[in-house]
Amino acid sequence: MVTAEAQKKVQLQEVNFYYGDFKALEDINLDIEANKVTALIGPSGCGKSTVLRLINRMHEVAGRTRVEGRVLLDSEDVYSPGMDVVGLRSRVGEIFQKPNPFPKTIYDNVAYGPRLQGRSSRDELDGIVERALRQAALWKEVQNKLKTSALELSGGQQQRLCIARTLAVEPEVILMDEPCSALDPVATQQIEDTMDSLKKDYTIIIVTHNMQQAARVSEYTGFMLIQETGEPGRLVEYGLTSKIFTMPDRKETENYITGRFG
Amino acid sequence: MSGVSRQLVFEKIAHLVLALIAAIAVAPVIGIIIFLFIKGGPALTPEFLTSMPTNGMKAGGIFPAIVGTLYLVLGTIVFAVPVGTLAAVYLTEYATQGRLTRYIRLAIANMAGVPSVVYGLFGLGLFVLLLQMGTSLLAGSLTLGLLVLPVVITAAEEALLAVPQSFRQASLALGATRWQTIRRVVLPNAIPGIITGTVLAVGRAAGETAAIMFTVAAFFLPTLPDSPFSQAMALPYHLYTISTQVPGMPEEIKWGTALVLLLLVLSFTLTAAVVRARFRRKRRW
Image (cartoon, rainbow over all chains, first blue to last red; front, side, top):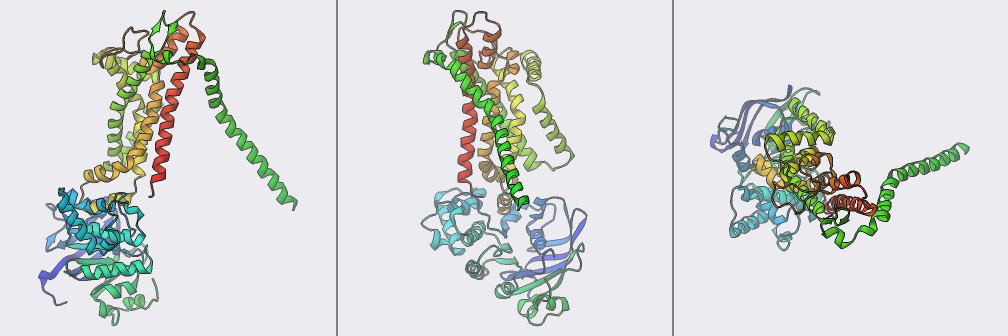
């Protein structure tokens, strides 16, 4: 990779990660380019989602974990003692596998983040909500029912609502953990189109099981693998998506991509 | 063939026996209600509910006992609900699950098993005597509050745990602090469950006798309680005294008092059921 250091939005350097005593990741080195979509692919249980959670420290919600090595956001160590985790999470948003809107109105879902930050003026919130919904390509469908429950929306609309909710916080990086795995092909298409329009303003990292999706949406792809059950996950190969999917350097990558396992 | 038909017969018998046993479980409740209505129904007049007892309680109404019980219920809610809810929030949302939380839960389970008369004596020792509250609504409410605390904590914990983890994750990932997450997402969705538990607990407090006899209840008071430091009459204790301490008590006043107490407790239970049903219908996660 030839891009300048300044454009590396997120960097993982020699990262090892443990759940309790179990080593889940080993020696992960990964440079994420700003304003690009980076896909992480690999078989189930290889640690793709864990890599995502390392960046916004959401793994800490789950329980006893330990991180070795460095995770940098704009060259600043996310795990330095002075790091404000709450601030970090408003800079690094996350879209989850299953759409998880709050049982509130559409409006209140999107306004949730800005309200946390103390923004309460009606006009300002109205503007933020509309802008976020437009960015998530949901505005046209919901503009006349902002006060209805988010749970009335279809699965695909709910996921775009979750994207809008994240955008309303104005993050720099958006993590997506298999965001389309619960959605039908049409809804998946809409999410992918949304991602495409978002990447000029945001850095997107997506974990996906769907290799066609990785090939469609991403500029860079990382392939992860565990050798055997109980072994830690490793990053086998990382590079331009066009290269990974056509001339991978490693045999394992080729086997996975051609569908020989996984 | 015969094997199959034998199984069918067995199935029918099992069904019948189980239905019968279920009926046995319900029959006493219905029986008590019918019995009380027959015996106490005639006493249930507006005057009975709204007037003071007269003639050494052998005539007149039970108004002060109803008022006293309502005050006690209110006092119990004021003490038990905030404390119980916050304790449950600590246990489910903040505490690292481990030995400490196991011991706390064990202690709560044991609190629920302590006989109410022990609570009564504890309340007498702590609130009435040591803290010099005297025999008062305050001391009684605190004692009842302690008594129902385990019920409230357990109900609140269940309600909090029923809120999907994905809501918490979504909130935290948006840059909310833990308290903001609890305050804005977890508690609002747990409140119906907490209310249900609270109302059930209150039903128990309303019917409690032993816990109030040393701490608040008066045999007879000519006036209604006018401050938290007043003594008060209360339905269960009133029923106890008129049934055991007053010779020549007219039967129907006793039954009528029992009926009012039962209806009061049932109305709390019914409220809880309605709240829960409403909530279930609205909830879609």
